[in-house]
Image (cartoon, rainbow over all chains, first blue to last red; front, side, top):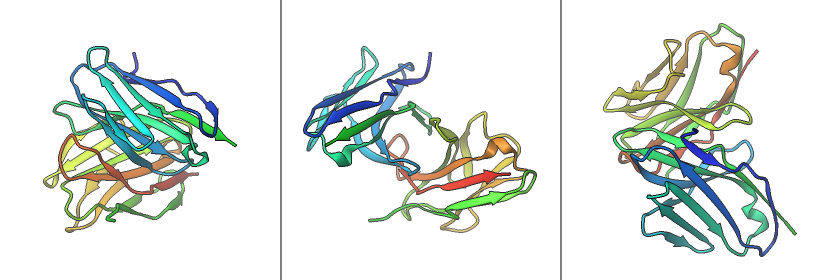
Amino acid sequence: RKEVEQDPGPFNVPEGATVAFNCTYSNSASQSFFWYRQDCRKEPKLLMSVYSSGNEDGRFTAQLNRASQYISLLIRDSKLSDSATYLCVVNVYRTDKLIFGTGTRLQVFP
Amino acid sequence: EPEVTQTPSHQVTQMGQEVILRCVPISNHLYFYWYRQILGQKVEFLVSFYNNEISEKSEIFDDQFSVERPDGSNFTLKIRSTKLEDSAMYFCASNGRMNTEAFFGQGTRLTVV
């Protein structure tokens, strides 16, 4: 089983749509969770950290379900500029490294 | 806004040659990392560095790889004898505390021919 698993997509949605991405992780000792955004041939950029209580940042909402080992990202009112690959990233307790999913590609069209 | 900077942005090298990729992490950060991303694949952890020593490394980070922090600002990745399969985007990252989000540089695209 992959350490961090994501649907690769692509998700093609019109401007203004709401879109949700899911991610599962295999290691129950995972303790920190993030969503990063990556544009084509660019570096990963932090979108938001994911907290147990869930968190929201403008149009973006992240949820964590530790029992099911599942993380989600909801994007409301999609913009053309949201087109990118969204990376689910996990850190395991007592390790330094971040473990990346393969990413979910989002394409927002006019 | 402070950022991680990497040089060069693109490096082309012949198979068997040594390359050094350079990074300047965010100045007050203590943890430094190298990751790589082969085209079309996921980002993979190579090595982490803290307190002037390697704290963790992956299976990819074999004897051909080494890291160094030669002064108070630079953090380098050396590949001793490059192979074709080393062609990838190499990202440097840093963070201020363990288990927190890491900030990535813009990457060095390494092409081995």
